[in-house]
Each structure stands twice: as structure tokens, then as C-alpha cells.
Image (tube, rainbow, N blue to C red; front, top):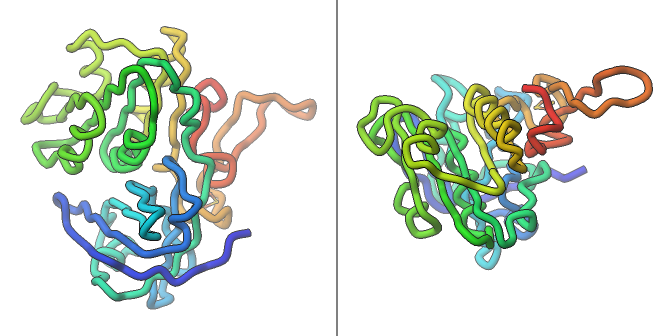
Length: 259
Ligand code: FES
């Protein structure tokens, strides 16, 4: 089991309505991989369980990590993270989870698909992935297309917005249709309806597809059981075998899980 560690806030910045970016100095940066996450505790002790936050960028050389996260409401753990300033300390556990299998992309045409607060983990993946063609599909609500510049430096970026203000009107699946895009392998992170559509598309087209179900986690450390999902793997006792997203994931081969 990993131990709690005191990370130090390097910088904090608001990127869009309710979306914040924080760089922290942490030992977790040394071993972190794209698609993994940290669980962050609040300092005041009012919340017993930590909040899982996905890793957006890794700077192992400088021992730091970037997390980009959404504040989920007033008096929440994420709100208290957003009020932290450079020099403050924050208890963290990590890196946690399994991350995306990068080696599967070698020589392939790739879709990197992110939606909403599932967009940030796609950035470090885009930076590290070595493949034939890197197509990044990022879905947002409106013109607040956070991380756009970073994505443009790491692949061919296609944007969708729900209100049609930037890029394709609709979602990342509409981007595929509108631009006639193709891929041999998919990596995706985002809300469940988006992942469900991607999983279905990948299965119809027979494309290898990895999805991160991180949105469905609550504590990230195996303590709350909010993240149990059905697996298609059968064992000899029953027809289904439940998986805990925070322990067995958050990244799964799409055909492995029911969502
Ligand atoms: Fe709490 Fe998995 S997120 S047990």
C-alpha cells in the first residue's frame, strides 16, 4: 500500500468556469504514468476520504505533477483544493491505478478522445505516445476549450462543443463522422455516455479500445465501493465478476467491462 505524502503546491490557476490547474511537487511524479491518478486529502480534516484527481502532466525531472480538475460544488474537497496557493502543503497518495497501455499504439493510427473533465489525462498521454498518426479529439461544453494550446503542440487536434461555438457541434463521435476520421486503436476518458458510445463504435468497427472510467470513482483508495462495475470476465462461481475501478482500473479494455 502507498503511503500518504505531503505534496507542496507550486502554482494554481483557473482555466475555465470551475476548472482549475495546479502544479504540485510530489514524490508521486517519479513513477507516474499517463492515465494514473492521485488521491488528494483536504487539510482541515472535515472530509475523511480523499478525492481522486487524474494526472494531466508529469515532469519527473523536476519532481512535479499537474492536475486539472473541476470544482464540484461549494464546501467540497475540490473547492478547498482550488483555494490552495503556492507553498501550501496537501496530503496525497499516488500514483494510483493502472494507466493507459502506451506500447499498443506503436505504428498505429490513434484516436485520443477526451470529454469534459476527462480531457486533462489525455494531455500527458498525447505527450508520451509514439504512434503513426496522433488524432486528438477533445469535447467541451462551450468556447472554454482549456488545454487547447498544449494539445495543438502534441498532435492533430479536433474540437467539439455542445453549443457549436468551436469546432464540430455535438460530441467527439460527431467529430469522427464530420471529418471522416479513422483509427486502429482508441484511448478515451470522459463521462459514461461518451464512453458508452465510443465502446459501441469500437466494437462495431473491431477497433482495440481503452477507456478510463475515472469519472465513476469517489475516493480512489478502495474505501467507499462507489466504483464497482461489472466485468465480462467470468469465473467459475458466477456469470459476472465485479471490478473496482480504483483498484482494477481506471483504464480497461472496452470489451472487458459493462458500462
Ligand atoms: Fe472508492 Fe473505488 S473509488 S472504492
